[in-house]
Image (cartoon, rainbow, N blue to C red; front, side, top):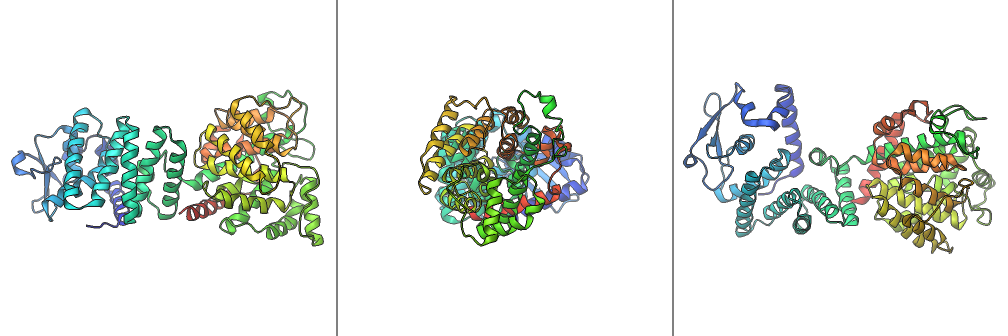
Length: 541
């Protein structure tokens, strides 16, 4: 029997809505002790019966009688208290073949085992016996999909028991079957399980890969139940991009007053965000303005960059952007004169790296070649020096991997790999890759005089801060205390570390966030984040 899983999820969510409407507070009570809660309902009567009066082939034994007033739920008296509650919650009548009924009940039980946390030893042993029998029966009936669903459920149970290696094997087998059958919800659900098992087994790259595909599917298809079941794994991509943009702006504002200022300011002084020269208190610089411009540009084009159109937008908004650097200003002038390309012979600066993060947010982490092409094309519009292009490619790569929750070690590995790969098409040396290897090994040290505009030095400093800090607040503080180009370094650190937070969480972690003057309303930033996340998810699928 084939089931349209999207409809099942929608129906389940609707049932929960009705439950909350008609029985406020009952959801938590049912989760805690379903049997006791249901006994108190006037519209239902519960009855314990001997095993002989229930389905002898089903370990979750019970029945539903709708002809009585009120309807009756019958549950075998041999079950434990937890299993009685479990049965009472899921036991509507089945009218088809008894063997198939048993297999399909196993599929339903998968969700309930997870939802209601069956973790006592007796229940776990019973569950293992139950699913073993169901798997054998499904195989005998030729029910390959049902068998795969049982594999996926057993993988979840093995994860709970700490056997991540075996869980990964079963989840992989289930995913292969679901992929052949093209059952999208099952594919997505199993990718989540495989991601969790791979991470627990020490295979983080596989975990990131499968988790990213699952999150993209949820973003597009709307499998809301998975967000409820696995909130730490199936997080909202748009919410994370919103958090990253917010953290970027906060880092920029934190660093603006201290750019090239004498070093030695205390944390309390730094977090006052004082006014300085032409910069009012809490102001963001051209870093945030250009990053938002790139974000809007990519959101409007589903991730495709148009360098000429970007330059046209930049030239139109030039007067409103305070603090534009000489390289960007020169590129705008060339564009107005009709020149086709930026000059690559001048000094290499960090301007391209500074606004490359949105490229990584909109393009999936596993589309390295396309991300590199878009980054180089967009960066050349303003910064054509090979070193600037390599640095921008590395920052875009880091943004893409950070959004999927990559650990500091994996982030540095991806960055070093990209530094080597990006150096080839722009025909330059792989010096940045060597610097990032030093950052990973803990041997790189920031210059005592502060971080310069050199793109490689900037990227090394950003990753040095972002991969060592234990919190966003400390990461931003470390970036500013390095001195030099404090606004760019702190902004990029915020953009990477903010990928693991929502905008609300960013604001909660930064007590001084109210001092920041955002370039756009929070709602507008959130809308841009949704557009970027949707484009990323569609391209990933």
